[in-house]
Image 1: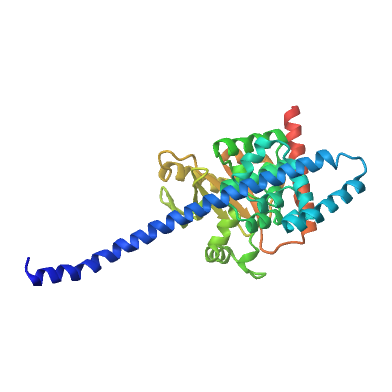
Image 2: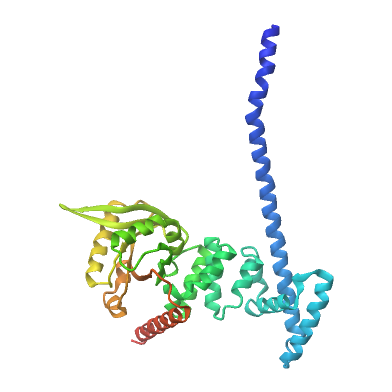
Length: 359
């Protein structure tokens, strides 16, 4: 080999080595991050199991005493001693958290499953919810939508469970849907849709039209989809639907991965009208014929309106047509008023369900 050729080869090597080094660094970073993630998950699992076992032992050995004040005194003393030896993670306050998780999740098998999916911070936010169905709902939604602790707390504060259709069902039917979600990852519309939707982030003033509402939603699309729930993908705005020689325009069209179906969204400034059902049914049948792909389920519709009549919705049997109607709020009401409204809606829905079951 000539000297000039050898020199050119030596000069070329550093250039070809640079991409290889970059790939090597990228691959090593992935290995490190993957190992860190597995280590963190293992540490979390062991921590949750430790806390649960401590809670079980305290319940069995101390809190079974009928004198609650005596039990609290012993736990407080135990917390002070353990904090001196092992740090603030074993304070009396956290010991009572451990007791609580042992109370609401008495099965070791369930706890083993939970600690593989949720952190101690997630569980601590869930265990003080009063209703077991509510706890189960948030556990499964955390798992399926991979909520951060901050998101979970925001969902609880926003009364997500109370706003879903599943909260209005008899407990045995609601548990059946949660069981399908847990064992088969099968999402249902009743788990997905909320009522009302909180659109307070849109910044709309007192006077606005449907175009303003639509534009605001598109401007804040990421936050709107977060309010809808994870799994949504934006497809189209003002989707043109041509039937014979007439053109119609669907406000918003999404696809939901978990449901494996298109979701049509219509925005209404006023209260829900019976004619809105016919319009949405037309859109859904057109989407079924022209847009649905192999492997997808039939499209469903969501009508977002400023108000609705429960009797209208019931008489029109909208769910049989794959349609949900929900109110939207552009300003959050005081929590007490919202709680009253939601609890009344749940009561009426359960009364109707009970009446239907006795017929």
